[in-house]
Amino acid sequence: MLEVQRISKTFNAGTVNEKKAIQNLSLTLRDGEFATIVGSNGAGKSTLFNAIAGTFYVDQGSVTLNGADITFLPEHKRSSSIGHLFQDPLKGTAPHMTIEENLAVAYLRTARRGSLFSRVTKKDRELFREKLRELDMGLEDRMKTPVGLLSGGQRQALTLLMATMVTPELLLLDEHTAALDPVTAEKVLELTKRVVSEGKLSCLMITHNMQQALSLGTRTIMMDGGRIVLDLSGDARKGMTVPDLLEQFAAKSGQKFDNDRILLSTIEEQE
Amino acid sequence: MAGFFSLNVLQTALEVGLIYGLVALALFISFSILNIADLSTDGCFTLGCAVGAMLTIAGHPILALFAAMAAGVLSGYVTAFLQTRLGVESILAGIIVNTALYTINLAVMGFSSNVSIFGRDTVFTLTRGLLGDSPTSRILVLAALLAVVCILLIRFFGTTLGLSIRATGDSPDMVSASSINPKLTITVGLCLSNSLTALSGCLIGQYNKTCDINLGTGMVTIALASLIIGEVFAGKKGGVARRVFCVVLGSIVYRFIIAIALRLNISTEYFKLVSAVIVAVAIATPRVRERAKLERIKSMSRRMRAERKEGAADA
Ligand SMILES: Nc1ncnc2c1ncn2[C@@H]1O[C@H](COP(=O)(O)OP(=O)(O)OP(=O)(O)O)[C@@H](O)[C@H]1O
Ligand SMILES: [Mg+2]
Image (cartoon, rainbow over all chains, first blue to last red; front, side, top):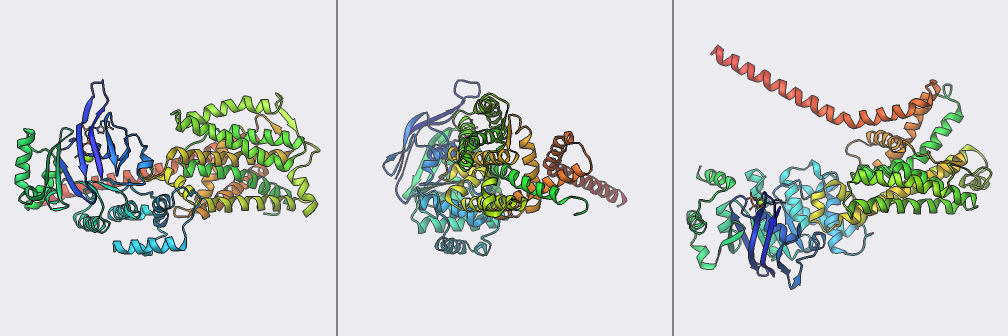
């Protein structure tokens, strides 16, 4: 269970560029819950993820994961239990290392914590091959290929695999399909659904696709101005349509929903 | 070739190439793998030589090798500490340590700028008993040493820690999202790298039977030149094993180039300029190539636009 309690984060405090990115935000995610997050550009969605993942420490409030207070735990110590995927497929993998070596970095560090000198065994390699086969991208036969030669979609699928090979306590997906072409995005999304449901993962997913936000998972969270303005689940969510959601947003925040990528994707859907 | 060079010249180039190969390997770790330009290399090379020389004079030539490596680890640790804990820019950290090492090296040498090891036992005289006194025995000893170092390095880069070090230099974003502590990996990487630099310094001291305070000057450029030559041999897609061996090969080739230059009666004063040019050209080449490609694309699209306009005018 993830418990975010009254956290705040201000960037460049005390300067003209001061930006209150997160304001007194609280959020609880139960074990195995899969929630989507939507919000305008600059609403603070990525900042919330960074606060949970430990990219920086919050100014106020606390973050607890499965009972452990991780508010001031450094990022690299959190990441053995939190998987974090970004929009940019290049961010999650090392381009000059092979597929096998990338997987080994992700796997050995978490699976055999503490032993710095362990190496990839035959059994590990079999496991990697097995997992790669599940991606259905033919990567299991290219384990010695440098990751830099893969396509964006393949790299993102690999990153997802790396983040979930050792089941994380929490998975954070920050628009992880937004930079992919529609067909690949669909494939990575299918994969995400499968991985999350098979591993019964607790997952937060930022998306700019309102349809996805309502159809994926069991809960939809809307953010604006560093706060959660709408939190839908159960029956209230079931009856929701995309126009309803946009209307709700306007009512809650007193402004039109402003996200260039959402506008784009709404246009695409209408076509 | 044999007519052009005396056998002696070839052997010397090979021996020195092998010894300097260790510094090229050190830069392979810091520059190629960790993506850090470690400018403490010059000072650390002299440090290894100085520490090694003092112990060799005291009658411990084998211990000297390990002591030099330990000194290198220490020096690398300080450079890493400045970078990772105190937020000093990596290039500046190297320069600071390099400057400090000048005084430390002098102190190690008892505040004289030159120390002679003449007449003392060295690794080379000790192995003479086993293999006989010939340049061949020296080459065998050095080749065996380099082979061991290379194999250990390759094995190391396949372990969790070694892979993490490689990931640190390759994808900082990935590292922060994996459970890797970049402070630790940078520190271990620089300690390892500097231990090799110091070992090389110690060996060159025993090889030349002397240690000079200015021995390391320009070392970083020479090693970079060797490294770059090696990376050319390894090619873009080479794995770690191939790259490690090619770096040593690069160092040997660099020495042969120098030998040719010597044979052509080019004065030794020019060598540093030549290495500097090699490094500058090699590092600049990819960028220049990219520029050229961009210009080609630009001119092509300009031409296409002009053609389209013409077509429109015709219709
Ligand atoms: N490291 C930083 N330094 C300064 N300001 C930042 C930093 N990170 C985020 N911000 C600011 O905080 C605000 C929230 O940014 P955030 O990236 O969380 O938005 P977002 O909801 O993810 O938006 P988008 O949909 O565009 O990704 C923005 O105004 C942004 O400029
Ligand atoms: Mg964002």
